Length: 156
Image (cartoon, rainbow, N blue to C red):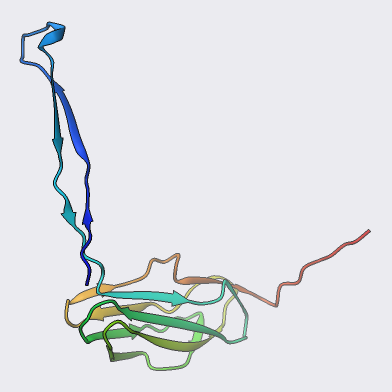
């Protein structure tokens, strides 16, 4: 896994001794801050679902786990039940993701309620790093229409 260096820049300080109020008594000092190693995330999870859904009609909710390391990674995932959806598929499991590859879980969800709805909450835990990932609430919601939206074209 590549660890790029991040330059933090420099600090420019202008100072003078206490009690010395002459203009030429100011000293200017510039210090370069050290570079920092930035580690890429070993596992990246992305969620894919349509921007909206129709009440009672199934849609696909896909979860992709990408292994960015040269090592085999085990990941535990758990998908919680959501009152606003009926879903098919395994709710929890442990998967092995090959080096530099990805694993995709696909679920069929059927919305039971209209409006902005939270998708079933997913929790992903890296077995090797004991790190847990949970997506933001905005990234894991979908708007459910009561029926398919139709564009009104009023040509006069």
